[in-house]
Image 1: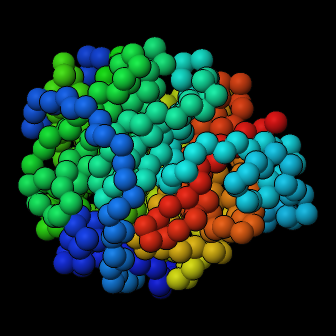
Image 2: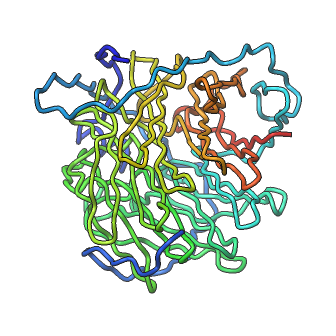
Length: 460
């Protein structure tokens, strides 16, 4: 099926000056060869003292639109695209207020239950070795913080660190059920190109140890984390072109107490559109990201010695806010966003077969999208069940839906509908070994600074 090329009206990035004001001032293989990289010792530091609410919020900056990409004779062949039926979400008549505790305001589909976790924004959910969920989330302001809550202790809240931070953030558990969190730390209340790193926190006993993955530049934006069976902490983030920096996507490994940081070869890209990290069947890292200059979705994989890139989708402006997962056979599955209009777009699904051929399908439309500094970040998340079936959760400001790939196409259920407060356009999603879905997202209570209420939802 051929789709018309759309002229997007979404927002790409920010001018350098505006960004300085907004963002920084106003099965795994343990023997995988290590890529050449910058190595730095990671000094530990204690979390800061209790936060206050005295600092003013950042001022939102003017943004520039994305230009549609012109046709090119050199453009790679598009992937094979199936034409499954795009199923509209079930009517909201199936929704009710059962299982939605105060202060949450959304309505929830029958057969699901919700829990209020805490005040905060941009949650990331992960499952420990026993299958119990934990959620990391944040306050994104001069007097911000990172917090963690686990279902094993009744959602008791722990403060990981305090400071001027930026999300999204990443959460992963090691094999001993220890939580690990990554985020971007500005390291100052005003912009300094020599400051700003990916920050890392790990719970050791009852306390959190926090350190910087120190590297030149102002990096670690859109951070994400994965830990394999070898216990090695792996992360990824963006060194943004908005600050005149050239590395783009960077990959991190923590070995023997030191961080190894390597640009993967993406070239300059902006932050804001997400990087997704997952480990393949051999324990090697793979990433997806949005190549903004061409408007493409890129899949990058490491084979133990070098990174290689594949263009997954290139027709239209595609690949924003991607989410990556692998099935039991080691094949990648991706959900991602295509802009259609200023406030609307399409969530797509891409998979690669054993022969290396990518197939792209449409899942569903989002019709209440808001882009920009306080807008969409990770508006879909993917997981693959034990039988190889992909599940995708997707969200705009009004509706959060749950989609499963059926025999004849995607079966899409409207799971959450906003009722009083808009949804945060960020969703995190994991499937348990028994197929139980675990979701976290937030309702927006303020946009200046961005504040909200973190929710956890599962079947029940």
